[in-house]
Amino acid sequence: MDVARNFIISLQDYVNEACEGKPSWEIVLRTAIVTLLFVWSKNFLMKDESMIERAKKTVFRFARKLPMVQTKIAKEIEKVSVSMNDTMNKSIDYSSYITKLPETGWKIDKILEEAMKYSKYGHYKWETGCASGTVYNGDTILRDLTTEVYGIAAWANPLHADVFPGVRKMEAEVVRMTCSIFHGDSKSCGCVTSGGTESIILACKAYREFAREVKGIKNPELLVPITAHAAFDKAAQLLGIRIKRVPVNPVTMKVDVSAMKKMITSKTCMLAGSAPQFPHGVIDPIEEIGALGVQYNIPVHIDACLGGFLIAFMDKAGYPLAPFDFRVKGVTSISADTHKYGYAPKGTSILMYREDRFRHLQFFVTPDWPGGIYATATIAGSRSGGIIASCWAALVYHGLEGYVKHTKSIIETTRKIYHECSKIPGIFVYGEPEVSVVALGSNNFNIYTLGDAMTKRGWNLNALQFPSSVHIATTVLHTQPGVADRFISDVREIAEDMLKNPPKDAGASAAMYGMAASVPDRSVVCEMAWVYLDAVYSTDGGKTKSSDNQKREE
Ligand SMILES: *Cc1c(COP(=O)(O)O)cnc(C)c1O
Ligand SMILES: *[C@@H]1O[C@H](CO)[C@@H](O)[C@H](O)[C@H]1NC(C)=O
Ligand SMILES: *[C@@H]1O[C@H](CO)[C@@H](O)[C@H](O)[C@H]1NC(C)=O
Image (tube, rainbow, N blue to C red; front, side, top):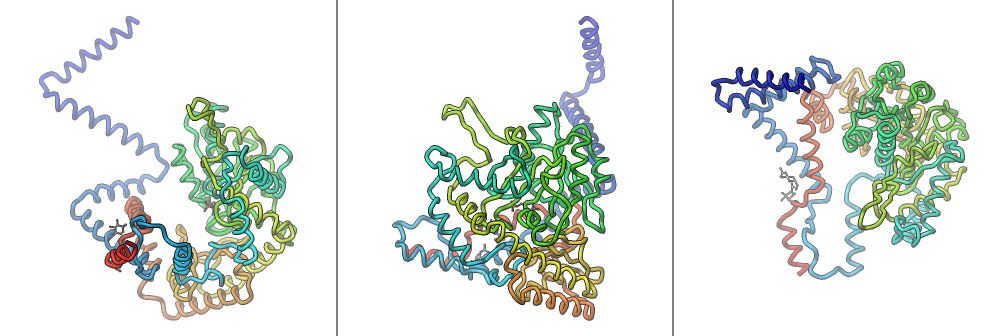
């Protein structure tokens, strides 16, 4: 005690002496600066990126504060904003927006007529298979069926299992059927979420809780491949935990498991692998990741959101794969999207666990709320029973036979695209795509320019970065006669042309990704993305017309 007091007193003396005669503002300022410098240098030294990268970013960040630079950036962003808003405007034929509730309700005929008009905007004909991914099965019988079943349960709310026992039964059955597909035993369990993103967030939440409550880790960290879905970053941000990205082998694009092993620390709360990953359609070495999980006693999540409902049937379709599901020791959870290759309408994904102790940690329970003891399995409170029912309908409509049949033709089509595109001079395929995605790159020209040329021919492909690439995710729509052949011959023609006449002007996406890749301060890129998201909610279009509309309504 005394020692401590003496120490404090002498420290006080020292500080008083040091500050003698100095104005108090200076003392405050000095303290603030020293503290800031300390915190900043600590943060600076503790981060993982290379020093040079960070120095570059820091310089850029300071440069951004200069008025001249600020004006220039603001101008650029304004330009992007104008063009994005115009794109939105154009895509709805410059029609006016409804910005106020109509004074009196519309007649049913008018609502249906207008809704039909809205649904016809846009020039992409996704039914013909021009879009990568997006709609995974356009079968009209399936569309009518799921819509009808949606209607049957549209007003049910699974939050009230007592009022809607039928929807509860459907949801339980959807989870059980999916667990069996992925070789879960009777202890396996899961839940239906609103999509792949929610499944991933919830798995990360369960493992954060497991780390904190069971293992006593204060600051848990996620360890995921750089190619794993952005939903893991979203999860880390929402859950307030750190995410570390593991590099991949630049040739196979599979996660480097020995690098993953080296990055494991006492804080690691989860390892992840993708089956397959979104960018290049490559399956990470799941057995090796599972083995790491067993060795270090860390839970392992397999993100099979994209291709889960393909890989589960590939064996039966004649394309066997290395084990990726609960047969692999160490795999503790799997996410698989019914709203992708499960061919259900958007709004469902299945998150599965090997054991219910993890699921318990995912649940949300608050025992003391005046509104009652409140407990929900997922992020949502109230949900639509319709979306559960139509997911259930999609599963039982296809059955094992239906899924195997579609899987067979999708894999056949993808392998054809893969093999034919590999032969085209000027372009190459990333890794060895095993499932439904083929990612193209080029050493001879800007691959985004090929993407833009494909857009001109009616295709809608995905642009990827680091490394630059465009990809196609094949769906049932691409298995229609002639679609894959048209894709291959379009790529071949464009590549030939680009080799002969290297493009001088970059197209739209080429320009954007080129610009984005060259900016060291990613916050500028973030601002550009905000502009896009703002434009999505823009209702400023056709102001004059909208006042006409208002008059008409009144
Ligand atoms: C689509 C996808 C997700 C997330 O899916 P959403 O349903 O869009 O939220 C996660 N992982 C992979 C690999 C995906 O392709
Ligand atoms: C684009 O639209 C958004 C949303 O309405 C708006 O905030 C923004 O100012 C618009 N940009 C331009 C350049 O008009
Ligand atoms: C959309 O187009 C209209 C012209 O039809 C224009 O008045 C309006 O400013 C545009 N809106 C945006 C957000 O660009």
